[in-house]
Image (cartoon, rainbow, N blue to C red):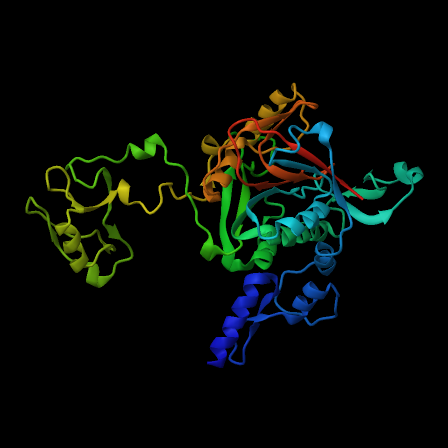
Length: 453
């Protein structure tokens, strides 16, 4: 009884603080999940402590990133009414500022209120990730250093592979932001994160810690390119990844991909079944289970058995129940191998269950996204490696309820089109976090807010 109670307590802590759950070996050498109380203390108090090692994914600067995520933030949001459309009526917000500070501010009002988050962080290729090295230099030293300056005279550096903390700096950046993003998600919320080969392994481990590995949803492969780059020495990379994690997988409902006319056209009703149109499915499965290998006599009198190494998916008793209910199909002549009827009206969800490979023919490719934005901005390319509308649209539709419609809005002063979404963007870094909710197909107004000290 005590063991069960202890496991329940660990489970309860894991629901709110999955990053504080680790594994140790018991006296029999078996792995078991336990609470990392030192990390829990650090998270609740903000105090860094000397602690013994345990199984975890770690890097230089991790504990400092944990502290930064929840440190006090005295910054405020200032409205930019002149750059907005219908500022006092709109429900769409565009926030300009450092996204870590913005997330801290949003956490105050949107704790556990966001249904779906999409984040497109810098990929750490050695050129696209600029980080704050947390020290200041005078303007006179600017030309003597390799890097940029932010508006507060903080030195910003490219995270190049020559940097001894190449991966650590990136991990610290994403770790603190994901900790805050998790707090924004509703219990039935989901987060999607775009990434490439450079940091997908690290990101997967970080997400397992922040959200809990039991809340892993999928690692989607997006086919972002449609032609090889022949100048590549070994392989021409044609895909990126999109990691999906839930706040609590048990409460999340996937809407599926909207059914197409092509998908519905596969259903018909050749025997005029009163339950409506249906399609037939294979009745054999593998590997074989001995009790599910039995002969079936077709209406034409032919005796059939499952293929070698396979068995029927139904027990003998269940098969004859389905046969009596007219759910077994032997073909128009009654002479085919039996198949089971699947009715369109009985689908558990109206959408199609998504697969983990998203082809560019379905959700677009990177060149298409770049060209679309260039057309909007008179041929100029302001954004590095944008994502196509159809890609973002699919992530939204899978888990928003009801599934929204995507549109574009125009800021009249700058004449810029944006995909309709709530977002925070960080200057000088192509990093967008979209907090998405109800989205209209019309061109809605935008409320522009500026982060200030």
